[in-house]
Image (cartoon, rainbow, N blue to C red):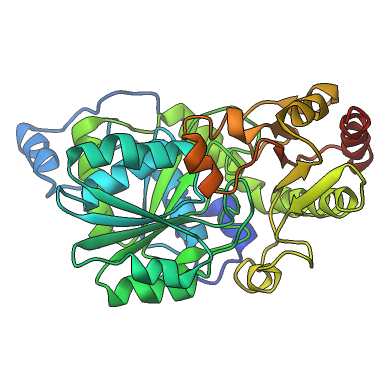
Length: 398
């Protein structure tokens, strides 16, 4: 009889992405099955009671237990080097579930200003309303993190590379600071995915994902995940069981297919993005390019150290001029997709100040360094020649 372990500790990253977490059913299927069911049948009243009590670890209800979702969770946990993962309906659901599980009224959060605009809105418009204090700091300024620690600080939150300026946080140093303060560090790993960066190995306690981005990789489905130690994620799972922002079985199945090709895709995203960034940096109509793969980037050396898989597929650049100039550039392109999503096989372009970060006040955007002339580009898998040709159309409109 062949050993059918769900995954082996000596498998490489690429192999884990294809095989981790999967164990065939009695039907002997080769591909991961899709379990489209809301509930599960019990053998007896005693088993039903044990399942609901948690003493029998079987499926109960697909709001919090589904075999397809479980394979996705186990595979992503293996790729991130985490003990456990909990899948959610979206990336924002992952952040919400983490905060609701780990914070209470009177707690304090230190959060980078350089996070997704909706993450900022979650902290300021909703969590603060329920008594959670939030201090926003400069991502790359260690003194700023240190100075904003309070006696009630329970959580540090950051995204690295940052959205959209590609700033790089020193995860190990910030983790050390958080732990000395008795707080946990949560890292949004959306821009890198575990193919490029594994924050848990750098000292972070929890990683959150918008699986909608690179994990899916083709813009098909919404999804999210929280990865970390079981002692933290048990409470996240209870939050999902109670409130229901759960990943569907179908979306989990699609994400599993995304994980199979994640390493391959990320290598090509990185290759194209670096070439585009280097090319843009030489163009007359460009004021600045923000990409950690450039030797001119202030945290380039740090990015090389903590992102061994590559520098990522997302960059931003400021055109010479104002919002009107940025809009002319965007409107002149005709191949890249004007959409706020990123991590897609298709290259996407967006104006952050009026879209992804449009919910921030002008003052908040200024503090985050998001000017009206800034454009974000998520570089896809098309021919580099065609991507550059479309960028040239934008430049010609300036």
